[in-house]
Amino acid sequence: MRILHTSDWHIGRTFHGADLLDDQRASLRHLADVVAAESVDVVVVAGDVFDRSVPSADAVRVYDDGLAAIAAAGAAIVVTSGNHDSPTRLGVGSGFAAAGGLHLRTSVASIADPIVFSDEHGDVAIYGIPYLEPEVTRTELGVDDARGHSDVLTAAMERIRADLAGRDARSVVIAHAFVVGGLATGSERSISVGGVETVAAEVFSGVDYVALGHLHSPQELTPAVRYSGSPIPYSFGENTHHKAVWLIDLDADGVSDVRRHDLPIVRGLTSLRGTLDELLTDESLSIAEDDYVEATLTDAVRPVDAMRVLRQRFPHAVHVQWQRPDAENSVDYRSRVRGRSDAEIITSFVTDVRDKPTTRERALVESALRAVVGEPEQVASCEPLALFEIDAPADGHRVAESA
Image 1 (cartoon, rainbow, N blue to C red):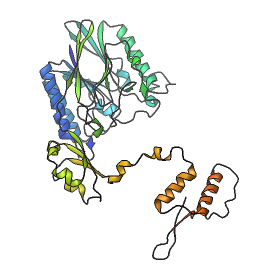
Image 2: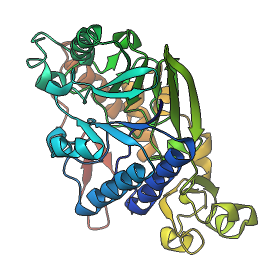
Image 3: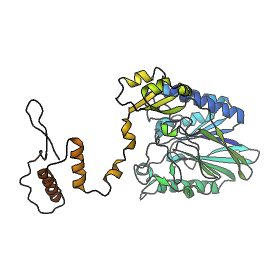
Image 4: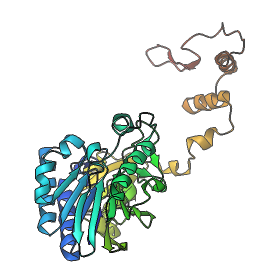
């Protein structure tokens, strides 16, 4: 039996305001092509099918078309819900859908109810664990004292192992979680609400293969525990990642082979840096003209209407920022303040704004800081809201900044 492992479609997601539905539709067609070319028997989707719990009608159509294409290519489909999905909405019609080869596992009640497929070697039991929010699911799982994702997933796996003990079958578990050792890309939504977010890979011991979702780059945590990643990138931090799916072959003894199958790039991501004129005229950048582009402009003066001008060459530019040329030599905030007292930091701020503080202002700062930490000090001479005086504007009004 051959299984294709994918996840994190995030249908309906936008990219810096750009609609991605056409790209997502194309990525699902690519998956269907892989199913046909590789004679895949079952496709497992490890959560985050949609980007929102209430997807748009257009997003649902892309999903429906994608499922139809995969089914037409010859594979059954098993889907679990992720933290972006509404398990109730995603699971609608699960009883009827199974008759057509779409198997939905979106509830706690279905965790130990596997979909059983058969081949020449016997049965393969595929268990789907939906995303489990600890606060919501711990009572139903019988672990009222659960503090985090590890606790509820441990309880879920105990149910699966108990069911599997009564079967003569090879096993696959689908789950949506942040497993220790996985590397985030920055485009994943945190799942730490409700407790500790990370889970040890050992939680999933005792099964032949674990198909994970949540992290957006393909990763092997152990030979039997892997993330497929998303089929297209969702942040510029993913512009160096090759998107992929895993192809898992099962023989009589379990997993006989796991192969990574890289997916074609639907639309590339490119980060550019330079003056606006350089970006518009550099011939070497022609390869990025159809990519999603973010640009850091280094002009001495902030260019006017830079996005509109940049899109004349890069129509899919989605983000532009301006950085003064001298900013490259600046150090980060932590480095600038490390080892300096509060008074020194405040003094440096005032100096940066207009000029160094007067002796009186320095004394007021020291007095105010002592008062904050509870040291007795007279600060009667301090006028609230006027620790630092700034030159009066032309109309004669005094302007003060509160410290």
